[in-house]
Image (cartoon, rainbow, N blue to C red; front, side, top):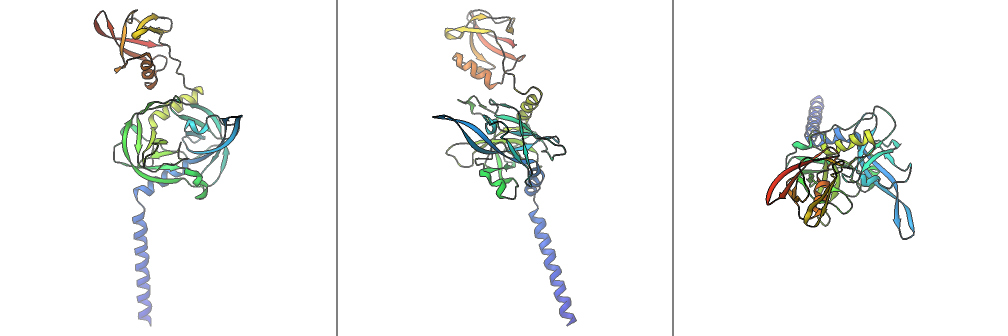
Length: 323
């Protein structure tokens, strides 16, 4: 009888060891990254004023975001919070705690918005370096797809993929957004994922999940976090992004400069009758092309613009500093 008891205990201990080994094998780099990043991921619930045939109507909407500072600043997409009704932004943290958020500011061109909730000692995201991403490295998208955040005990939903491409350019959109230098991933993104973080193997945020390619499978795109943080810092200081850069240039047919307002820009080289053929090394064929290049380059007051011009049969490179 004693012999049997000893055997049973030994078998039990072996089973425990096996279970421990199985559990350890499940605790991978992926699970560690999700565990590190999840506590700072939030779900957003808003009410928007939406134009219809009769005027405007209230429409509930949802999205994702992530806390970027201990004192409660939150990054998300501008399209999540544009046209929101006053006092209608509800932020839900992992675990279910709810806060009313204030819209600090948004920028439609970059599709970045900054929110703020009251409080201190919030768990916040570690910010990575989107300039050093490698095609093929794994990434995890976190957020609130199809309002499933609440259904999963108020925890962000995770999807795993890789960096499929970097520096994906879609240019200027009809709604004024500029979708350039995007991170492409095959991590599954669904409605509601917008504004949530794309994190790397260290659990560091490398992008803001923003959109999926229509009529495609596993083609999702994220705003690089380096650019998004620059926008967020400017919004935090000023409440908006200043893009009122003035070149002081006026044109007539064939993009020939007709007038130069020297009070609007620092220009020592461009002259009347110069014909513009490229801006910042991009060929331009129309005045609309020039505007698109300036917008896609996110030209601000004080920036230098490089013009390739035709003057008296010779090609010259000249510069202009905007004001």
